[in-house]
Image: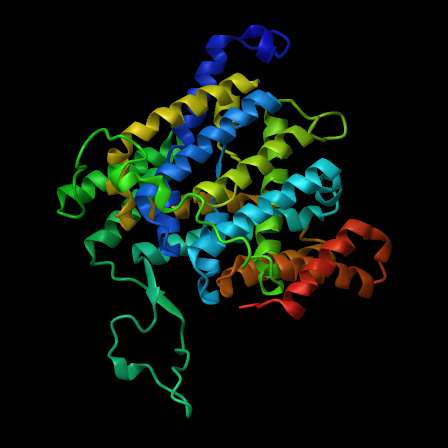
Length: 456
């Protein structure tokens, strides 16, 4: 272990790496509950979806350990799963096509990583826009959590059908106000609020696994009040019965994805994962003192290669796009510096495959996992302080990105709008010299979303 992972060279030890790997696993274990619950809205059954989520984490962490030797865990991304489940709902496409899009985006990642284009594009995205993506996705996740838990609900909820006015063509008109506060007398809404406050308190106190503890505690409180049900078992064999992965594995539809109408889907998955990985690697590299004197992640092509391969695997087995997890910072804080920590995390995820019955009840309880979405949103919106508010050519595109994501209920609209508006403002203000070729390429790709795709 010492020689393979170069522990002494990185100033670490077997014990430290084990502690770091366990810490990272505990911190991100909530993904086993939340990711399948979100993807169930896309039509992916929760049982096989849970197996696919865990398998992807196992393979991703294992590849990160063996190829990149970095203390970084890999699993299905939060944000991308919301896009797969909710952002594509208006297109009316099946989950098979959505998984096809995940796989094809992984292939694109692999190609541009091998060709060196990925690093070039990564350095072309303006800093303020990078951080606005995180803020917008965070608010989007928070809104989903608020809506799913009933803290916020549709304005017409609880009204008679006559309240839905129709126009001359018989089509339902938009309500005067889109949303309103939910019923604060509903016990499940109160449980969700309490769960969020508990998670927040645990995060303030820097308790490991704050989100997972909050989910379980809220679920137990709900169970005591008669909501939900107890686990049917403690252990179960994966890949059989309700956890039969063959129901979703290799069911992806690739030919349908290779059409012009799918360009916005592929573009969005590409940009989201691309930027998520870039931001995460930079942040984790800084935390682990892995960045060079220019602030760049050394040998970044290795973790990016892992990201691409894992993304392809995600589409094959039946889950959303995957990449480096920011929760790895907890393991790094515990001293992890090499891929051995990622190996430990992979082993723990693998063992979790046999305890899925303990996870399944939590996936049915929106008041339990919904607060975790809000909490993740809180963490992601912290990036707002890195946006340049003094320069309107930077702040306006960032603002457009955030509000278009949230208020059109579509991550693609925000990403593409921001990347188009940014160079337009630079050109109009006589500051074209601040643009580079990569920024122009990204703007043209995003403009194609509105000209040839299906903005919705």
